[in-house]
Image (cartoon, rainbow, N blue to C red):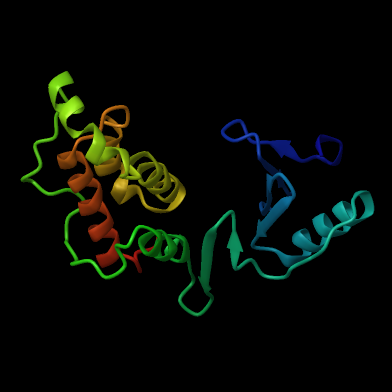
Length: 189
């Protein structure tokens, strides 16, 4: 792409851009075989699509509604653009039987005083915690947090500390985060 005056972003190697003489930009975001093109000027978008079409076999799916599991909502009248993972989070809540849970307003409860498990605690709770999908849920929450839900960062960072030896109280913290998500499912960035 550099041969066509497109520069690679120094912040993200999957982002290319070109600045035009009129001050407009066109951005191309690549991830494996997905491409998202953005610009204020549709002429620049069409030029880039033509260039890519001459080099690669590609399919134009029209206006972006979803990419990498993120839903894109664009309101041209209000001049807003938002992204979310509402569908992913709804599915996550259902998978872990938290879709009917009681809602909470804060991502972490102040009553949680989470600390590392002692060897004795880890041994005594091992059998009951073995069946709990702690690492799976926390990993899924991390995926949701990245890019669309920065409000989850602190609480997920907190429960991540206990991935190797989770206790029942840690699991209660994770379920609290899921209850918060249930109450903030429509939140968008």
